Image (cartoon, rainbow, N blue to C red; front, side, top):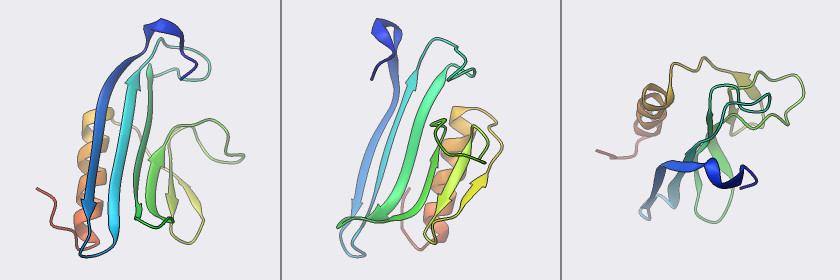
Length: 106
């Protein structure tokens, strides 16, 4: 992970939807605040196809030129800036977006 020994896992969720050939894969870490992760969290919330391919992904990896720290990748390949209201509210938003794609995810 490259964050030293101070990182702690905050979310670790994998859910498969075989009837649609899709899956959710979420990881989030609490990390020391830094220039790279000033909010003290590093996350990726991926909804995509089991065989590969993004449908929706939220992440805060700072390697996307022109995108804000918190952003969303879409199926078309675009990257959109998003607000970061905190890890749990963002998780709820992501979960609703997966449901809006037709998945039955409690």
